[in-house]
Image 1 (cartoon, one colour):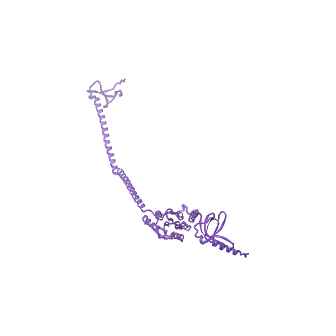
Image 2 (cartoon, helix red, strand yellow):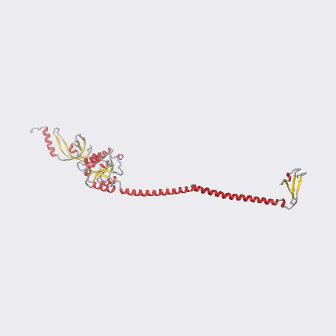
Image 3 (cartoon, helix red, strand yellow):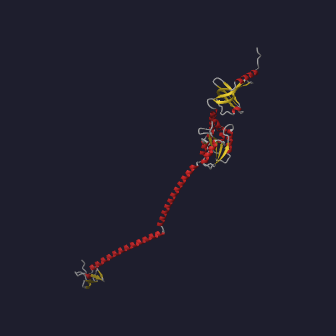
Length: 395
């Protein structure tokens, strides 16, 4: 019978067997018992309906993990079996972890989007307004490539008065996210009105730096307005949601942030025409008013008032003459009528018909008004008799 071996020897043999046999294991399971350690290591288990196995992902590999591990998340792991001989336990040391059924980047994108949305990074109420006529703009982008050339071309045609400060920035690959953050933090210290952060198109991996949380934090904490202009129109990056304004492309960013000189020229021409029209109408109205006032002044001037008074005097003179003539003619007619009446009734001109004229003190009187003893004169055409009343018989 063979001699027994020690526990340590057995565990060592098991370690040698397992670690040389189970290399680059490719296994799928559901995460449980998840712990993110302060050291940067990640400890968890994966399980299926019948079994479970402990797993570890050390800091060196964990820093490249694009998404957050979550309890209940189904993942596919590539790794090696390692044995801890003092306890005789084994675990799966993970080199790579991918979400099951979808890409790691897609999951990381959704996880970060939900996280930042919960923190209020996407709220419309906190978005800063872009200046209408920016004097200086900081461009956080690569100094080479189509993006910067497209922006320059659109800017020169659209509004050449604006000055640009290019901040050369690594926008792809290892170190891009840190360089973007540093460029944003530097740009916000400059005397600029806003920042345009972006690059041209590419694969999701090429654009990924703009999906990093630290870039989102830098954009969110920038005191000046930020325009995100990454990729093409179909690309939506985390930076697009956090920025104050999203541009579909770098060229579109220039169309958004710069006024259109041609539109302003047309607007000013229309404004000038409208101004001329209004001035012309105003002058015409004022001239009409002045003419009316002039006519009114002439009507009320001293000369006109004198002329009016003179006309009134002439009218009154003519009226007076007319009235005087009418009065004179009326009196003349009345006198003539009296004269005719007198001539008709003058006793000296009448034939004697048995009538006498009775007078007293050269005034013709009525006999009924005489008294006894008074002297009267009786006159006919041929005879005058002086008489004294002796007796009156009144009938």
